[in-house]
Length: 142
Image 1 (tube, rainbow, N blue to C red):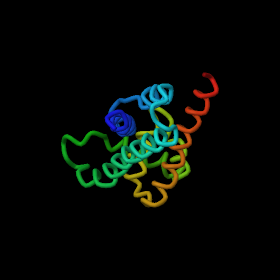
Image 2 (image 1 turned 180 degrees about the horizontal axis):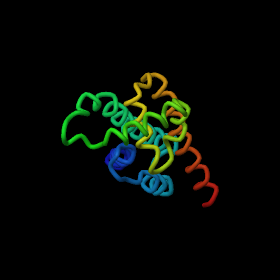
Image 3 (image 1 turned 90 degrees about the horizontal axis):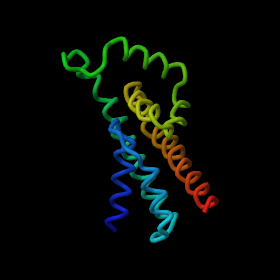
Image 4 (image 1 turned 120 degrees about the vertical axis):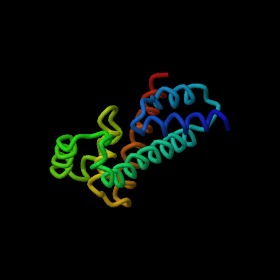
């Protein structure tokens, strides 16, 4: 149970704007064969999606504080992000699994007020799909 909690936490943190690597933890646990693969993929996926949901919620509510002197983004950065998201829209969330760019995408989705149902649907499929592909490749290599 502790190992699964650690996997969940690693996946959750990796999906937020904080640095983290959930793939390494997942693959290490798959290779130990102490838990069913479907359970590991499920735990990692739920943790990762919930971490992305934190980003979405931050984006959704952070614009209320955009006039604050310690607001973390400039007006230019917000405008650039909004223009990019306006061009690509919700389809860009298919790239939410990609390291480095995926986390800001989920934040931008919140800023742009992407509907929660569509956000969760696309992000869940993208992130679970990534974990499934990683596990299949790892198992084929062993």
